[in-house]
Length: 355
Ligand SMILES: CSC[C@H]1O[C@H](OP(=O)(O)O)[C@H](O)[C@@H]1O
Image (cartoon, rainbow, N blue to C red; front, side):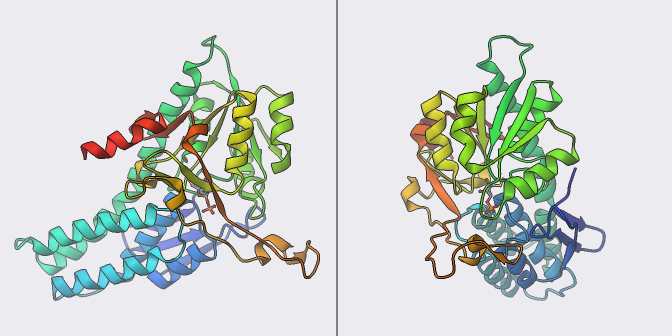
């Protein structure tokens, strides 16, 4: 499986795959500081909500790896500033913000623990970050399991295999490995339930044609690439059982921010009676927002839309609007597939009411 992140816990060496160069070139970038981490996230050399959080946190771990910590309170204040800086790299995905909150709660508890000396605090803090890698992969495999069961539960014959559609990239290049929506695709492949995975190109960054297609070819899946504009005709001409997409931020009512183009696919899925699932770990759900209209939608530079590989494809002088995400209303979503199970959008709020 392709690896977006290479981290050696023996010596704190971190490298990330430069996804702007895929599929033609596999090149890893060394990350030594939070500034390096911020830059690769902001430039989208690294992308995907879970991957952003893990690379951001690991960039902090490697920056402080050899630091001598003398005062716990000063150290706590230092890491808070660095985490807030990392959150600013991209505004829509919530994972970096939530993991920062979790890390700050953990660091504060260490700071307040009189039994924990400064060097212990640093070591335990770094170990907490390193655990994110394995937890993400475990979460994704659980998402895959629950998603596969949910999709097959609505099939008549147990021997049936189905066609799925996905948008953008939610696989090993968007996470620590296995993937969220692509994790469901992998789980169905593993259980013999996948006939074919269709994927959209996902203009303008082309996560589908450059990344998802790369992952699927690399692992020899039966996979077909389509233009973003072919989705309606695909639903008309091919039997698509379900759409599985990722998420950058899910509001507590189930409204979901995801890659631009997701909303129109959800509208078409409803029109054609195709089940539409969002696949995301709980770290992508934001309990602080009640609906999707509170989610900030990042707008990317116009050059990312008007040029391909350095060649201008749009008329000079045309004005451009390039939102990187849109909001799919909960009413269009059949289920939100998480590592804890599958939830109807209306039931999501109860998960947070208890906590
Ligand atoms: C599991 S990745 C979630 C999400 O992130 C992608 O956005 P980007 O490539 O801009 O980071 C896309 O929206 C995926 O669905």
